Length: 336
Ligand code: NDP
Image (cartoon, rainbow, N blue to C red; front, top):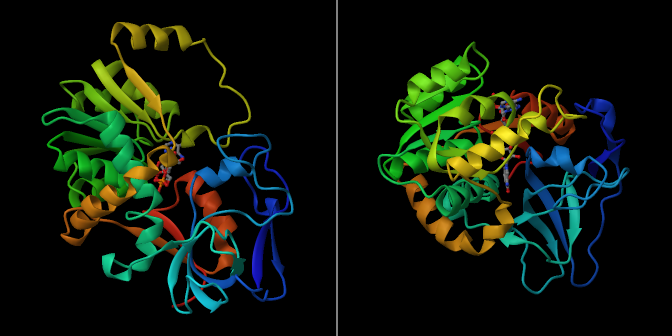
């Protein structure tokens, strides 16, 4: 049984030395337990935060512990009354090939809804994040301008397509010409701007002649700096992620911009609201029905970026934090 452990805590950008691949005995299920075999492991930006010490909204991974995360798994042995061999379940088993479970935290996956790996993306946590953050906090209205950061990714791609379905003018921001072309031409956003090219602020201003009513924040940093002056009165900003800062070890230098931010919050009556997807867990059935329907009808498109082999998960997580993934990052751990 291959496992990947957190070997040490990173300082700044993680390196391969922060992870350790080990081989352990295949565990055997006790009465009431099941043995799960991992098929697909999800790699997500939040995993960077779990590598740090100290409490966030969730506890960190212990040094020497198995890296955490959700996987699509198959039940291969069962001593549990509610689960049978061959079932496909979403399970929080982390970065390992096999794991025991007592049934806690398992979620059955209905293969008729789409490919089973979609439970890690558009029909799972990232999709729910996009849907609930946009609908509850962003509250998009027809004719409004919605700007979406990390627009080609798991969350951003769904946010923008939902915005189009709600009648908004949608501008994406992504890294590189290839991602922007995909967002623009295949996902059907009105435009997509490359944050790695010069003068993002100027190009964004030109792309948003009526200002910005909803900004779905996934990134922070220079992307937020470009959007900030364009926010309209009563703009809503679901603060979903700040990936540009996840590897930071200290605050940036320069003038203190907090007073400017707060002045704008006041004068423009901005709503900035942070959220964690679990805040809206109760909306999962409604999300699955609505977004699942649009995915099956081809009205929401979805792209996966699949790597082979658990041993490559560390390299691939480092890549997600650098913007090397193109679509929802998953690792194929075993074959169905
Ligand atoms: P993505 O599939 O979008 O992958 C991450 C992307 O972030 C990269 O591909 C890259 O895209 C972009 N990125 C990385 N570094 C930078 C940078 N310095 N500046 C600008 N962009 C950068 O990931 P997800 O869709 O899974 O997650 C998107 C965001 O949503 C993250 O911030 C994540 O933490 C957050 N999130 C929050 C949740 C919540 O409950 N609040 C739940 C799930 C996700 P590019 O090449 O386009 O720059």
